[in-house]
Amino acid sequence: MDTAVTVVLPVYNAESTIAASIRSVQEQTYSHWTLLVVDDGSTDRTRFVVQKTINGDPRCRLIQRQHTGLVNTLNAGLEAVSSACFYVARMDADDRMDPARLACQVRALDTHENLALVSSRIVVEPETPGFTSYIEWLNSLVTPDDIARNLYVESPVCHPSVMVRREAILAVQGYRDEGWPEDYDLWLRLDENGEKMAQAPGAIHVWTDSPERLTRTDPRYEHSQLTRLKAHFLARRWPEKVRIWGAGRDGRRMARALEAEGGRIQSFIDIDPKKIGGVRRGNVPVVSPDTLQSPQPTDGPIVTAVGVPGARAWIRGELEAKGFVEFRDFVCAA
Image (cartoon, rainbow, N blue to C red; front, top):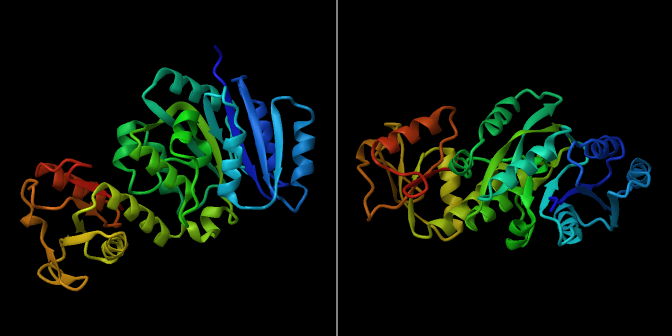
């Protein structure tokens, strides 16, 4: 039986870019796909451009809705996916797919039944100063272990580049609007559900970085909301006391967010001699990493929250050398 893929493409006021996005789907080397363009009540000429570009292509369908926002539009797309569809691919209205992207992702999911989701390697246009390091990091996360180890550092996959098993995304009830990034929230819920994610070899997605991109303009994607999102899921993973590595700004922010979720901070860990021996958050002690021994049952797990370049790798090495196991005894969250 041929594998069926449905591409869900939400659009809002993208008359200048939507045609190229649709054409990149139409030019895929993989042929067994359906495209759902879900228009979130555009007020420009988007609808007319979509209809002209589709031009009777039976594989493409335009769904028109009143303007209700991205999350509702994404869920409307999921609801319109046929029950015969195996895989759901994402696409944005200002991006483009490499012609082999869908074929590479289908091959990866067909071959590896343990994977629920595969992303693509990202090419950014235009290149943006200050964004390069994030893209290099994103492209370095290839295996399920790579993504799992970095799941709380930052969103480990590019949303419009993914293909996910339909049954897996429906099992976690699709997208939610919680005031934080809807895609990162989905990855964390898939992880909670025991699902694995990886990067599909050969799959390439061209990601347009524009000043109007939601991640640059929507308050849901601000740093404070990312911290709140991470803390929400960390508190569900470890509802008891935790230790935070980092008594600086990032560590204090994480402590506040965890406490808001009902967490309790046992101690801060820091290498700054000016901080060691002091207290934070009222009466929480700041201790040196030298006090850490092998994991003890009475000690809470460690959440690392130091955003300084190179700190994450160094802290990982220090903890692993002492016998700490990632995700059992510690997690990197910055």
